[in-house]
Image 1 (cartoon, rainbow, N blue to C red):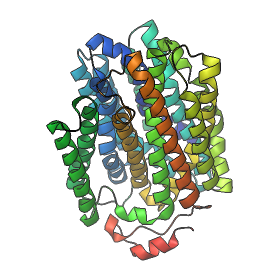
Image 2 (cartoon, rainbow, N blue to C red):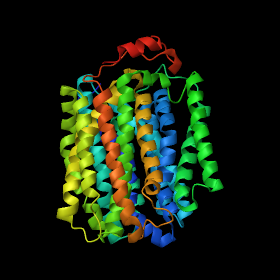
Image 3 (tube, rainbow, N blue to C red):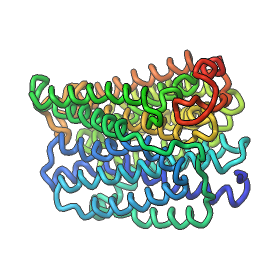
Image 4 (cartoon, one colour):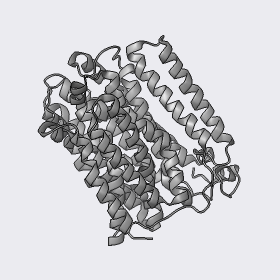
Length: 486
């Protein structure tokens, strides 16, 4: 075990931040390049949505498997494999000759992200002394979140001074550094009680469910709800999700252990996660796009517009993690999303002729404050409410919920906001869609705050080991539920 204040602890934190920061960075950096990608490849709205969602789909579908693989074969080993895979797929993205190849490479990127993301949090949980974990997770949340927030700025600069391809190629040297630090400084950890088999049925039905729903909602805007392709995709998606739940309920080694959701704080944290990250998925997809297409900002200026979010998360997230540990997670997890909701109402005013100081900066500052207050306590609650040896599973579930929320948001928000057959790169089509989408996202954040206020406990303590339904021994499900803090 390492301490936060020691050099060994900082090396572990650096490795996990570098690795997971790649996925946070890539989740947002590509958004700023979408107009140029659309111009170079002649891509329509659906192709641009899939450039984002191809990555998120494979990430969300496989992230639970990534957590299980880490628990079984070693979290550092799977983390390193994921970082290397991510780098190779990023190279393919940067060299893509057409939009179809780019989308396929983005899907491969998501596979690498699914291997490395749950491992980064599980490594922190397994490596740091118990009284340093909240601070380490807070620092991780802030620094990795900074990578996501700085993505639009970095992407804008690269697109403006060179080419959009560099937003992918820059991942390669960063990944090499992450692998080097991890191999030299991160201790190996695993769960000796992890299930020995793999949940192939759950993996296939879960992936089919997410893919069907994403394809159906993305195609709905252009083809209409009566299209056979849309109806078939949505039907397959819904049936696959139902089959996934049934398989997980009966499996002796489920990919998604449903018994975990008997733990009240864990369930509450994931409900809040879904609402918050669905809203953020819409924000990071549409804000920088709207700034360029509707407001006429250059790629660099559009990216720079969100720098206050970066600065505030860097300065405050570790402190928010410590605050959540001291006063409990309920208050910051309630207040944070409400602050973010106000920020989105301000950002929804951005239109043609918008100015940075009057129209963008106030919302960006409030968004940074709200995210700083929310992310670290939310992550700490999701991981700290389950038995320690299941940190990989808990991390995988929480990340899967976040990615699935963002995936569905990008697929559904343009449809819900009325894009129809319009174009995401046409100012007249995008302006009303953006405004309504930001208001929908604000509503999601209010729902997340309400869930936190109602169901997140004042204090979170670890229960006894989870029951045999998850592949290990422990008390019966009833006792687990009784142990959850009220």
